[in-house]
Image (tube, rainbow, N blue to C red; front, side, top):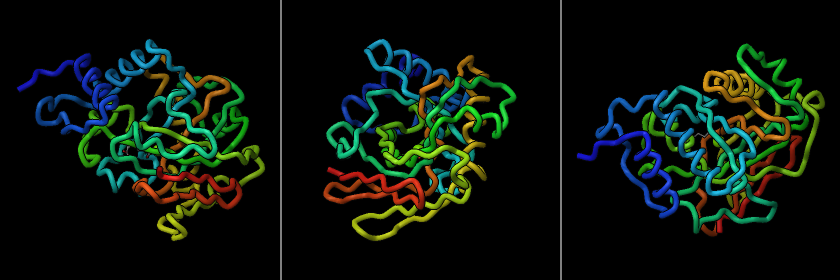
Amino acid sequence: MTTWTEGSVATELLACEAERRDRDSFADEWPALDATTGYRIQAETLRRRLERGEKVTGVKLGLTSRAKQQRMGIDTPLVAWLTDAMALGAGDPVPQHALIHPRIEPEIVFVMKERLEGPGVTAEQALAAVGEVRGGAEVIDSRYRDFKFTVGDVLADNASSGAYLIGDVAVRHDELDLAAEAVEVVVDGDVVHRATGADVLGHPAEALALAVNDLATRGSAIEAGWIVLTGGMSDAVFATPGSTVTCRFAHLGDVELECG
Ligand code: 0L1
Ligand code: MG
């Protein structure tokens, strides 16, 4: 049996990503891989991403809605990193050539106008640091077979990061009732999921506060200009090649992805 270390798990997960290879959870081979260890491995994979030239563009939360928690069987919200290598532009298709088994989920996105540093940040204080609110779509991917993982596994795997697309409609947070903002996930014309901002921890600003307070425990903050994906509002849908997935927000416009 392989004896895993934080460094060798980081190497393995980045190799799986580069080779589009999935693998089993580490649970059987390293039962002690808990959330704390997962975050340390995540920090090491970020260090290696930056070393190869990627730039941090922001932060993503995961498992902030009941729909996502129930699907993945984990009820702990996750915090992870976004880099410029994950950013998609309008009209870009899902990068199937680089991903293993991508799925798409709708997200409420904050663009930060001010630096935010925990601990002790409330949702109200967090919202005051937000410049713009946008709709978004995250293309999640997992290096674990069938997206089967423990909390330590998924944190080590940067919370299933893949790619993300931000919509082109921007509003100020005080122009919109964010808890009431509705989204439909439409696959080839059929609505398959519906959710609202309230599905994200009651209000997406609660997710932002959670992220910044959690990052503070590891000595990090959220910088001005960064984006924050507040977590899948609904369950994700498979990015089946040939299909089109639209995250249709009530006031934040359509965020559409061709699945390649
Ligand atoms: O694979 C997953 O679903 C874990 C990451 C969760 C992403 C999200 O809830 O936004
Ligand atoms: Mg997400």
